Image 1 (cartoon, rainbow, N blue to C red):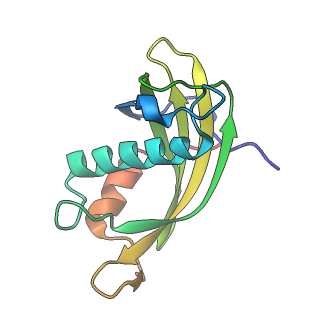
Image 2: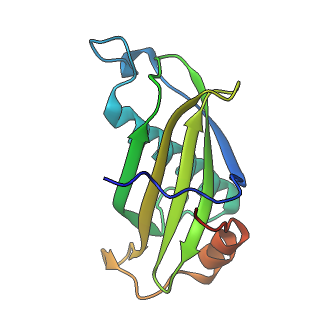
Image 3: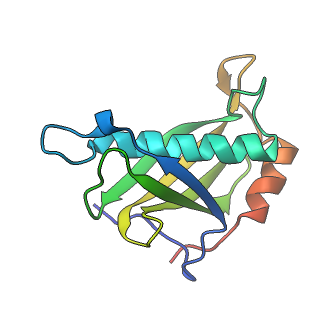
Length: 146
């Protein structure tokens, strides 16, 4: 399996702070693997809310189609983390986002890449194109993958 493709310049223009919960730890006393996807989604939600991109204040204008996640070091419950995003490509109806999850001190926890597809919430199906406001926000966060 390939590692997630990250920006060549290592720059992630979107940074969101998130916190794990003590209950996010598994029986091995490390952050459960599924929690990493939730952290990425929470950070994505916070950014979309900040950009005014959520429909009805709570719905994404896209859905997750595919993700590739590489675990680097174990996380803990009750930990502050920084989720960094960079958009690496924008298509007609989809985009790719590269991500890193790290501690505020810089220790890397995980790297990820996600394919997200435009979604029509009213019809409950894939949208033909990305909404103009979403496209503009994504292009503003654009970086080229390595």
